[in-house]
Length: 502
Image 1 (tube, rainbow, N blue to C red):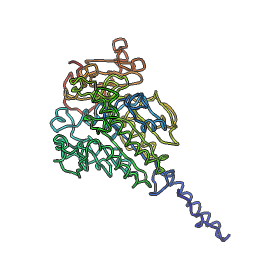
Image 2: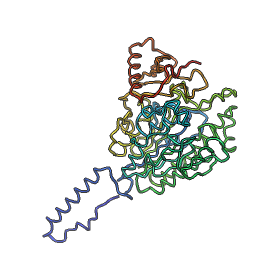
Image 3: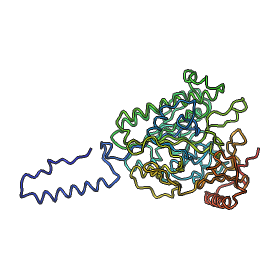
Image 4: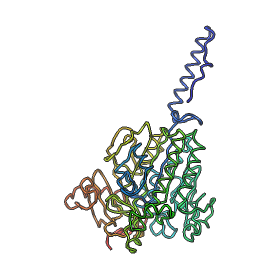
């Protein structure tokens, strides 16, 4: 803790009293100004500096996949304990049902369609076919750069997928977005871990250069990223840090060890579900090491930990062809990854900040979106927000005071020019545009086809399309959605993109 050295201000001679008081007042005034600014001094104790932020983003995890969200089989005791020590939200949304745009939303505080990223970043040719860029523009305001400029140590460990990989060898490194340290996977450049003996995307990545490559078996990915996170935190305990830990264990293909797999054989004959549960379990164990390190280092009261996911559980057609249900549970919500129905975009959100966020809370009414993280993090850290047109809102009051009512609609665009992935089950295939305002959610295609309206308070499973019985609400939301789309970058589009047809 910073303390004044009183020996400097001892009054040994009465004749100097007035002069000393003037000096004392000047020093006290400077101290007041110091504490009114968001700056800090390295080595300050935790209660005098901005909070640390650890943002954990899990790839392809369903709304119902965690024990604390109702899964009766999966063992996630460390994440469940974190939820019990903080708050969990039941109406948290990501900005896309697929990885790249979902990550862009966290990075920018804006809907990813603004940045011509509406699906996952692929090869140059496939990006061009969808009118997409090859990587996120590094000149835009980015959350890590903003925190770095405020004196935070910054790091990104885990999946990147905002540029680089396949045949894209000119994407900026994570450092261009404000991360001082990074370790990514094949879907990014810079230092990265790749799978050995992999002749696919890892082999492509190895040819691109731009960073040190370490070969790691996939079942060791999270352990590797957590080790780097613990090391980073240990080296920056005496200064505020902003850390991304973006994990991809539960992204197909699942690669558990035999020992990890044995634990879940009894739960199902579905081999994919066994594998899914096994890698979820291992991920939770590794996160337990990270949480334990933060607590044992005495950083828990000044560290905000966020756990959420980037989109719904995977939905590859091969599961169905092989006679298996897709692994991962949406908690009964319609849709999965690659779908704008709730199961593709509604995700778990858990936040812990001991002493600031009351433990044991479940917020069922606040509607939160991934674009809200950037402005909210600024508020929680006491930082001035950058000059940017936010699509997100500041939801800090829902953490510190109680549930809030969302002040802005949420918009989604997924895919263009019929070049995108879709779930195996026809019922899970959604139109490509969506808006939610209040309890109402409208979905449609660019040409107005497949118009659907749901009152989520009455039809959370999106089984009752009431568009025809609520024409005024339908028209109002349709007008807002199409106006939003008109404001997006002007790039090629087909008329009936995203039809729910076979």
